[in-house]
Every structure is written in C-alpha cells, then in structure tokens.
Length: 297
Image (cartoon, rainbow, N blue to C red; front, side, top):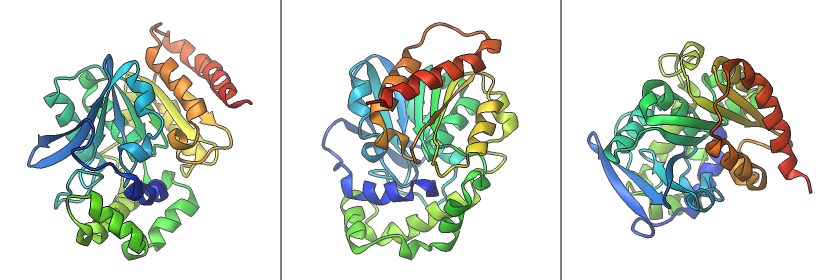
C-alpha cells in the first residue's frame, strides 16, 4: 500500500536476482508469479508489502521461520521478479493469485503472515478461501483507503508516479523486474491508484471480517501509517482476534522490530491450545504485555 512506499524504493535496490536461491514461477491464469520455498515443516505463507518484495518486507523472518517451518514467500504481479499484467492492481485479484499458487502447491490449512498490502491480501484470502488458511498474522492492514492517516493519504494523493523514483531507483527496477525500466512509471501509477481507491467494500468489509473464523493476530506500530482506531476496528470485527500494538514503532514492524516480532510470531504460530471465544480479548491483553517485554534492554 502507499504506506509502504519507502519500502518499495528500498526494495528496488535490494532484490535478489531470479535464478539465485530457491526461486520458482507458478502460472496462475495467464500470468507468472514468482515464489520461493525455504525450510520444512508446517507451511507459513509470507505476503510482502505493496511495491516491495520478499526480502525487503521480511528481511529477518525468512531464515528465522525456515528453521522450523516450510516458508512459501510469494511476490505479487508486478512486484519483484513477477511480471506485471495489463489489468489494474486489486487486492481481490492478488488474493486470488495467492490462492492459485497455494492450490498448485497442494497446500491447505497454512499459516499466513502478511505485511501492509500483504496483510490485506491475507485477510481476504482467509475470508474467501478458509480451507487454505489456519492462522493469520496481519500487520499494517486497512479495509478502506481512509483507514490511512491523513498525512499518508495526502502524500499519496499529491505525489505523482513520475516523482516517486530517482535515477538509481529506476536502474535498480530495470535490473530486477522482467518488465524493464520503461514500465516503472506505469507500475508506479497502478500502485498509487490501488492505494487511493482500494480496498473496496466488495473486497473486504467489517461484515466480511465478522465471518472470518480463524485465529488472527492483528499488529500495528503505535506510529503506523494506519490510524490506530482503524486497526482497532479490524481487531474488534474478527471473532477470534488478538491485538498487538508495538510501542515506538512505525509501519514496517517486521523490518524494524525483529527482536520483538520474531518471538511473538513464533509463539502465535506454534500455539496449540484452543481458546474459548469469550476468553480471546483477555488473552490478547496478556499477549500484548508479554510481546512488548521482548524489546526491553
């Protein structure tokens, strides 16, 4: 999403080259999606932020999780090593792309960890394809463009695609994207329109969240680019949700606070004891206290 714009620019400079490491392509519909598989064990699906890629959204989580899980990390159309398509970007479309990859890999009941746009996609995936999802971690999600802070929304509204990229960033995009540097302005404008107009109410809504009967951890920084009250709305709308607000933290929770995030992430994914629905709010408060303590030095 637009709140991940700075990470997009950083991601262009740090992407891996296709063919190095555990990379693969899946054909979903008529287009190709790049994904990586690391480790073994219960599957965990990583969904990166808008305009970013696997490595820059989860620089400290891939290797950490792969020590106990099979990590499936997917790059959405137009992102990283995945070619763009002629259609506009939508969250529903990217959720269906993600479902297509998981179905081709014969995966079900997987845990999903999403950041920013990836968090939105993960929630939609859980709503539309509950058979594919066991648990969801969603950090920095919004269900309406006006869930963004005023500053973040206005920045996206007033910044055109041509002003988003330096010469170095264009060169980095050219070295990573199969679409070539000439496509960068097109892709940048598609991202901008996505962030200004989506999610729509037919992609995700409070009513849809109320039907999401999966264990969900909603995360946000206390200085996030998503309004805190909007994060609370998402949390309160999901029947079995937990909440973790990271103190003194901005939007990129995974990248900026791995010393806090990784232990809490592992604990949530490995939690086996079922909770009674009436207990989940109290448990969320306990988890918040325990999770915050990881950052004390």
